[in-house]
Image 1 (tube, each protein chain N blue to C red):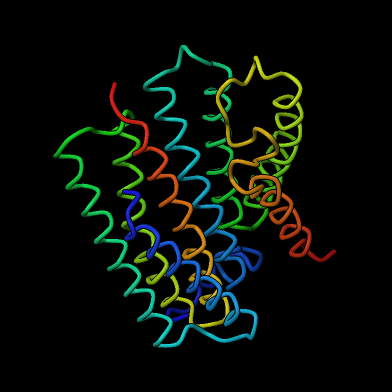
Image 2: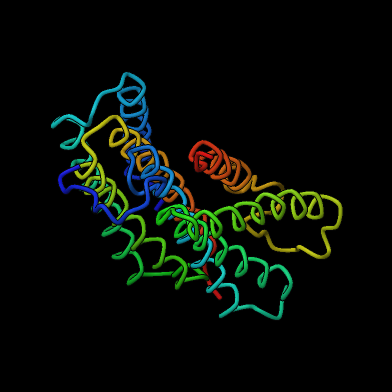
Length: 121
Length: 141
């Protein structure tokens, strides 16, 4: 959970968040590029989540396994949900939704790392 | 917006405008995370800090109420949103102050502990934005 994949995901999400927030600030609706980038981020997050799920089956599980799984489900659904909502809102506010979604993702990944680091019990 | 908004929807419904939808998105995230957190806390370790966990549950219900109230708008929606946003603001200020002064009562963090510092102070800002939204969209007299 603490590997380079997490770091890449966090950095990518933050970069996309800044980009989308800037687009919203410039009064731009989400472009095809923005939406495609969100989908690409979704794939990256999905890989991260799958790696984490695989990790549940070998070795030590996080102490709060239920919470961990809840966060995994939220995390994998987050970027796709932002994508759907942004498609429904082809104005600057759609860009803001993408920006907010991409800002929350790193927080979710950090929480996942936090929960994963407390094992046993 | 692809579909046209229904004529029955009140004009001040947050669901009807782009900025309102962003506000609802953020409120929705908080309603979801607060209720998930409260359920886990109450289900697994209620006896450790009953006050804090009940508070989490109450906060979760209030976030859901605020989200719904802002979304539907109209007289009733405004009343729901105004009440819940006010309680949120008072809650985050009171609990924030208490959690700094009296750590015994709040051993485990709630959404409102430390003025919502665990959530990037969003719980402090959100009710203000909600109240601002209600003020901006107050019915003309």
